[in-house]
Length: 153
Image (cartoon, rainbow, N blue to C red; front, side, top):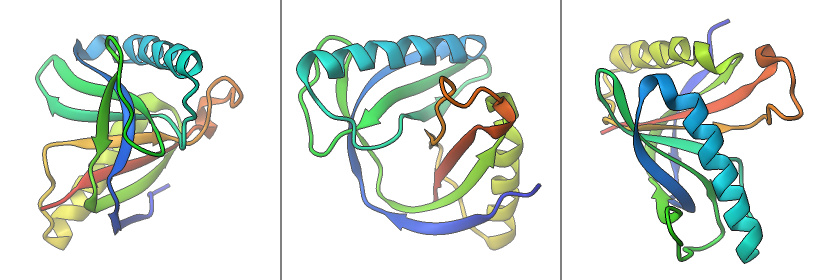
């Protein structure tokens, strides 16, 4: 099934996140670790998450990736330790919905890249994902829903 791909304008979003450069093979385990650390932090200081968790990919290397894992908040917040304030970028983005396992998300990104090429859009060197379904409650990975965002110039 081909994803519906479109261009939208979005506002910047304040968030709290953990950023680290990690080996590509460790992305899933690091994400789980970071989400757990963030959940503990949010509970400890009483901040409410205002949207689904995300991963912002700043830069890609051959075997490493610079990623920031976090949760949106209603206004800028101070961080503590590894938990730092960040902002999901605003502006024009290409977006698509990926339904299925996380390890097949590259196919949807490939479709987005082809679509942008056909439409004459130039993607920036960052992208992010919002995880709309919780693997704790949605047990079948074929039913995972992830919204993808890819800023364009």
